[in-house]
Length: 487
Image (cartoon, rainbow, N blue to C red; front, side, top):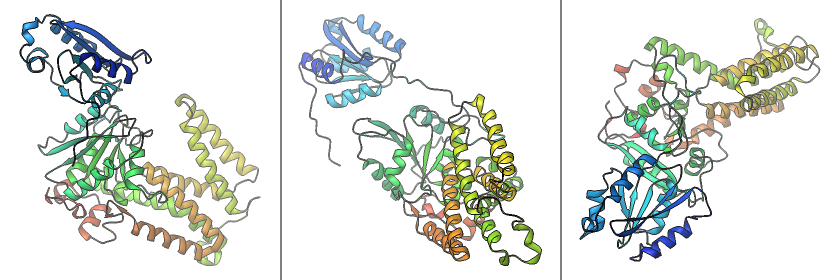
């Protein structure tokens, strides 16, 4: 790979370096960009930093040490003397490119410009405002760790390293965005992960050409995955460090994005989005039961509405002993319109709940239950069966561990309902077939989305359906082509 051409090299002239950084960083125009003009050891010096990104106590300590220096203590090589003797700090580096210096200062490190030096010293004494590593709301467990990822990339990588103390764990740093210069970390275990998958993911990230990442990891996903018309997620999000560690051990590659509390797991299959940490926090038999119940709930969430509508409008499809599934008396509106209205109503309620303060969420739920449930039935807008089956479908949606998969399944349910209402049995069969074709043709970084069901692998599919005891899970997923297949 060719080296980046230096357009603005550090000059031997102290004044030229200061003038360039002063102008390009907007000193005096932005209140939080600070330039400290100093005079230590008989030399002019200057510090450029962003207020709020630096640890004041560390800089005060370093400035105190520099103020005690005599001119002869920096001779004959001031750069080597400062870096190896007089600045006792771990994260220190040198730069000869003013553009890189400017980008680093905007990211948090402090630039120390010294008269008579053709390189600039970078002191990474930065700190970011950060919240505590609390348990994620979407991935709660009854037992287990309560820490979760935060919005600072260094904290997130350290939470992962705490659980993966493998000498070949790699945390490769990248920057994405011409203007945002967002910090990205590609993480994998070198002795396990397939080099081709790692290379493919790194190339996908490095090829991102945009000015910024306004939505963090979600923007990264859309660039590296494509397939914008496919609603199904090709990567998995997690806010749990233990979940991230498990996937590293399996051979997956993780993508950390600074400013985002979620980590991207790549590549993933359809079944990865149906797994939850709670299954592995219980005894194997209990975990297997929980997984079976979750699978049933997910399938109910997808198919119960279209199937019930099909049977309710075509009673001849039911046997004599199954006639209770149908409708005794219709409502004021056609069944399809009722389902459509209540589906949209549920989504409106979900969005309203997101935008409602926690203290008012309970009141919103009570109002919605009264209006949608009791009043709507009494005035004849909906019938009881519609409320019942929609509630079952909603429970199946909420039982889906992956929020992204639940949204995709909800959209599928709505489409199946539309084609079933329009074309009856043929519409349902064709819709189901097209859905299966979509999943079969979908790949996540060349990994079949329905593996190990299609293509079929007995051992792997058994582990998907049943939560096997950990001592028996002694093989990594073969589809990932890991270097070390044995656990």
